[in-house]
Amino acid sequence: MRAGEVSEVSQDYLKAIWSAQEWGGEPMTATELANRFGTTKANVTEVLKRLDELGLIVRVPYRPPVLTPAGEKVALSMVRRHRLLETFLVESLGYGWDEVHDEAEILEHAASDRLVDRIDAFLGRPQADPHGDPIPDPDGQIESHDSSILLTEADPGSYEVIRVSDADPAVLAHLAEAGVIPGAHIEVADVSRSSSEVGESATDDSIGADAGIVVVTVAIGGESSEIDRAVASAVYLSAT
Image 1: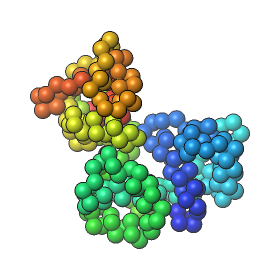
Image 2: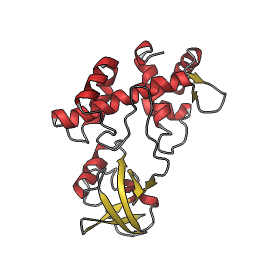
Image 3: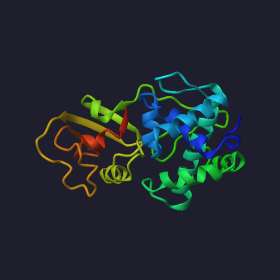
Image 4: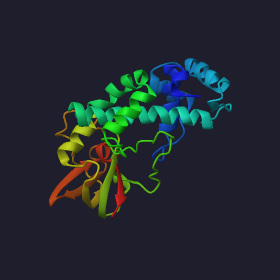
């Protein structure tokens, strides 16, 4: 079954179920899906029933849904669309990396596989989107980053930034200003507790929500910066 053969709602659910575990997260429960899509648990149950009937997931009572191979194929097709569209918007249309997620969420449902393949070729078949998320190939093969490390959990040492979560545009803007972007080489100097509100300068309350709890000190190009937990938890590293 191809992505275009199921509803937009089904596409969104399958992509969300797959994406939740890509970087080591837990499977999404019905309650988490309801929160993700701003709907009721009863509505989620109805959607999951339809996906089960279509052979795209396996439903087990009181457990998170599991994608079947057919469901994973659709999910990866949607992930491919989304990440290539984000890359196109940044590289060809001048969007900022903190602006593209919502745009791609809309466009991915209208884009055909043919258009997505043309965009892929036009961009030179990029391996990752602007946030460092790997882009599946046309056959659904995707690079794994099983050995990635969260910045909040990194020991002192040298690392390369391989991915930044795009869940919060304010966090993306904050990290871009600090130079913490995919491909950047950083030195983690310290991970410590602090009583000071290191997120006071942030313009968005969500960035400073966990400030004063964990501070990560990093050096980029000889410049030292302190990053609070709420921001650092969006950064994935690879040891160098």
